[in-house]
Amino acid sequence: MQTMQYLTAAVLAAFVGYVAAWYTGAIEGNFSLLLFLATVVTGVYWLGERLVFLPRRARAAQALEQAAAQRRAELDRMGIQKVDGDVQEAKGRILMQPWWLDWTAGLFPVIAMVFLLRSFLFEPFKIPSGSMIPTLLVGDLILVNKFTYGIRLPVINKKITDGNPVQRGDVVVFRYPPQPSMDYIKRVVAIPGDEVAYLNKRLTINGQPVATNALPDFFDQDAMRYFKQFDEQLGEQRHRIIVNSDAPAFIQGASNFQGRELCRYSVEGVRCKVPEGQYFMMGDNRDNSLDSRYWGFVPDANLVGRAFFVWMNFGNLKRIGAFH
Image (cartoon, rainbow, N blue to C red):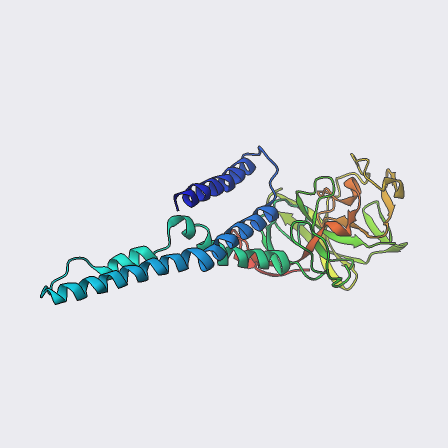
């Protein structure tokens, strides 16, 4: 048992060290991998507890109880009625789960449930920037549907079911193509085969301007200024966007991304042909969003899921609810 204590201490120290190195920026962490490993390790301990350690403790407690019964019988034959020691208390100590199983097998059901929910059903995210204003605000805590576009295996993100096709207008969380360890959230504005153009701050899909209606100006509390706001319709869903009329139309600082030859940049903006299996994403805060205009297309393999619900914003409880 002492060997198991040392082994468990080393395993727990490794997990703590990984999290600490990730937190301090010494390494690039992967939460999906960490959760998967935690599920596997605690699952092994849970099986060990059910098949080995708990039966062993039960046999030891039974042996103690039998020995105590024999001792009481012998003392009875000798005429001694009073017996020192509490057998039940000693039995309870023997059956008690040791600390190294408490911190492993004892946590397995919770960790396994979180892993399954997060991997195949819903995953929570926090909005860190204003690129999706006014649809999503900084500090919004959102839920992402992990099965809408097909179920994917955790960690390796391999799709095993087809699911529903991605639609124009969907708000999607995906792995950032230049740095896949990072998650981004944007709106799908063009799907495979589309020709998308954003020229002079007007969006067109396959030569057709996307319908917009002017709304009252939007006041951004972080920037402490008003921006022009529009109601835009992509596909079947309507949503709001904001535009900074003072920002230039041309795209400054676009990277040399894969498939850039499919895009044509000018002082008016950009026009792209979306390749098969990829998507063109933009933020609703059109002049304050680092999106496909700058770093290119998002492959289907990078999709995480469709964002659909704000479950909490500690600064504004009115934010709770579904969004488009």
